[in-house]
Amino acid sequence: MGIEKLLNTVKFDDKGLVAAIAQDYKTNEVLMVAYMNKESLEITLNEKKACYYSRSRKCLWRKGETSGHVQYLKGLYYDCDADAILMKVEQFGNACHTGAYSCFYNKVYEEEVADQSIINKVYNQITDRRENPSEGSYTNYLFDKGLDKILKKVGEETSEVIIAAKNKNKQELVYEMCDLIYHSMVLMVNEGVTIDDLLTELTKRHK
Image 1 (cartoon, helix red, strand yellow):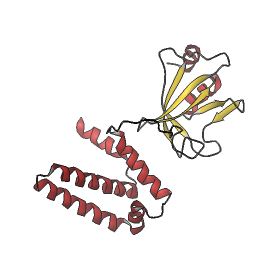
Image 2 (spheres, helix red, strand yellow):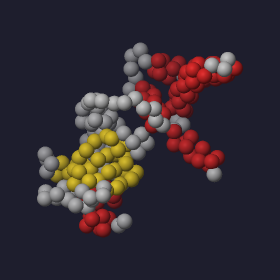
Image 3 (tube, rainbow, N blue to C red):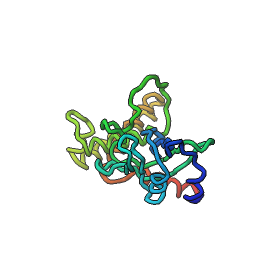
Image 4 (cartoon, rainbow, N blue to C red):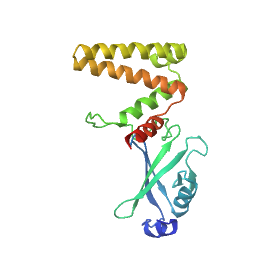
């Protein structure tokens, strides 16, 4: 759909605004809700970076213009009534002005459900540990010790996976495989390998 057609399709309210929801394109985590007018929506699509309209300041607001926490646009959709926008974005830094990654950090209820997005969450947490060291963090300990230590741990965990499999102990195998995955992800971050790099290679093999 062209930009002009989209601007004519979206139903802006009597103040010329439409609600815009930003969602992490990798984890599907909802990051924030803001508002757009026609100009900010057009800028977002043209520049492929989120631009909102600030109701308090009554002006355009390019996300990250002062903080550097830019949102790169990966997808944009509107709902069945055309009165709300959903953006899938690549978030650099944090989405919330409080310093939280997502504005929706006040948990009321959450059923524990395992999903694939946890892989991205763990990877992002490891990356954050490297960029923002935390005292007493085991992850930072591995980064501080360097590549040889990380490789040693990957080797040790690989051996423990083999032993668990030979012991025919599923619970132990699951535990040791998670240890191996974690240490492998530390290695990935240390060597600049991303989840997308793995997905690209796996997609090639799947064809």
